[in-house]
Length: 508
Image (tube, rainbow, N blue to C red):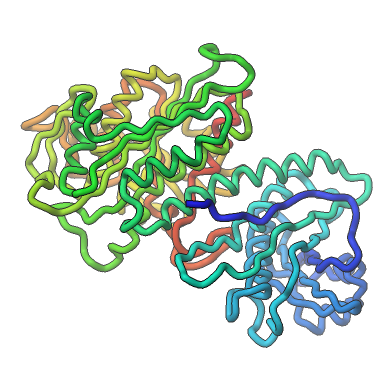
């Protein structure tokens, strides 16, 4: 599998002649600020106004320039950094439609004309552009035109690079560093999208593990180990084996290790990231409804986010020790599938009473968390999973939930998300329901009665060994049915760049 190629974004100081050009237009108190845009494109404001340029965030107008080039006026609304992410995504989709996709997303169909044959586009940055603005714009440009398709048709031509043109006197080096950092965030997100979008007739646990290991191989200092079903059985990973037992395609455990740059070795803070890797989820014997089941190919989105993040962490050479664990299984229906009422013994010896085979994510995560605590002795523990439909009800489809045993840790995750354009909301880890995860025929109950997201988090907490731990439930924002901001329909890659920035923040 070859990861999807992303648009390159760089910051330069020179406005080039003969290069298709895009300019931002702000919406100031309901009126477009057209002066700077007109000057950059050598147009008059009357022309821009006649084309209906309003400056509303995400609006993109195609402009025929006097020298035969194309230009675009891109609405940035009030100019806050998040608006630039929206603007970048809208521009990227418009250009993609113009370059090669007939009838794609973008301007009115009559504006498309002949396909645009261009590899570079320049974008005029506003005066006093900030690193936050450049980061947001870079994310929008790099991810907004992401496209995953399995087809016999050759890939259409694509935009390869956007040059962000800074004003003279700006701190170009600082802006360039912001663009490069955001490009790594985007790369982590795209890897997570690629893995989650891959169809499950190809993506079984063995394929996912070997593909991740192959992507890690060329990254200096990043080591990958793949454990097969025999190793899992020998070492008592009862939860992973139970969930994967109904499938003809056996489970795997992926372990990625990054020792931290700078020679800190054992002195560096050690973080373990755990990602759910269910390559397809039928629900098992507690069968899911048919409607929407096709999207269960993305049920390993948490694992994909962890894999994408680890690649970026190593490429960025962050001075933090990080271990990633992704337990992988296919939850299927057969005579060998696990059953409601079964009692399963996990890696750390804890026994679980199974109530619902569709609550499989917490079963595999419990093994990985216990393994992390017992064998890796981390300072911090973070897990990511598309775990509960209840979180969609609680937070909708664009916000992830953070349950944390440590207030500082939960806050650091949310701050990292804010810097990278991913929204998180703190969820209560209420002790009122702690007793409800206690089992009657086993130590703990897998799916006790109570609020769904909370009960899953409390169950996982049983395996964290009292470490500082955060549980990220991304069941809502991991998938999208339409494009918005830098997101496109399908897997979103949500959480990948939050993890990268969270780990980067531990340098402080």
